Amino acid sequence: MKLKLFIFGFLTILGFAARAQTPSSESEPINNGLETAVFAGGCFWCIEADFEKLDGVAEAVSGYAGGYKNYPTYKEVSRGGTGHLEVIEVRYHPDTVSYRDLVHYFFRHVDPTDAGGQFCDRGESYETAIFVKSESERNIAEAVKADAATALNTSIVTPIIDLNTFWEAEDYHQDYYKKNPLRYAYYRRSCGRDARVRSIWEK
Image 1 (cartoon, one colour):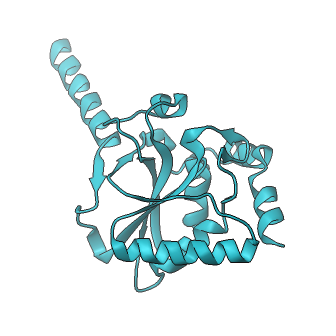
Image 2: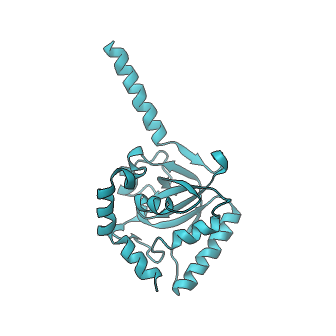
Image 3: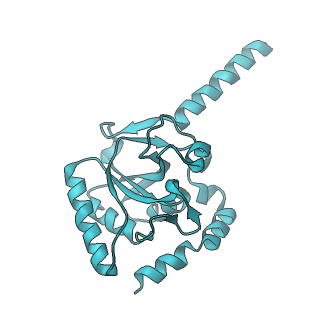
């Protein structure tokens, strides 16, 4: 009996791990008429929380993209050297919010002039980027990026990159701001994210 319970528990853990690191490609179908967009905006807890406030967004899922390593873990990505950035996959209703709207919203919730990370989080995994799945998305992203550069009267360092694979992050990262509201609020405030965004965009 103990052996059966052990085997069942082991298989359950393996199944959980596989679900936590399931890749999502550009050809994967989206249910309920949803489409997806992938953005890197520093800490994925924060950018996930920002996008889930936007009308027309069904959910935002934290993950990794841009690197070469399959099945990346948070420890590997945060340590550096994988090429992956912390990202979110935004799952949205295109009849309510457009891709252009999403890109515009993204730029105004990050510091697109910072090439070394975002706010208190430094290093390659915290850099900004827009990951595109088609030439149409690239054209829109380029146009909105140019508008942002004009609005700020400065260069925008956020690159626009072809999406290869989105790797979903571990389960404990998903909806972190809901699961740990006090810790999240303290982190976001201490990191100076909102203050910096206001100082850039309120001008």
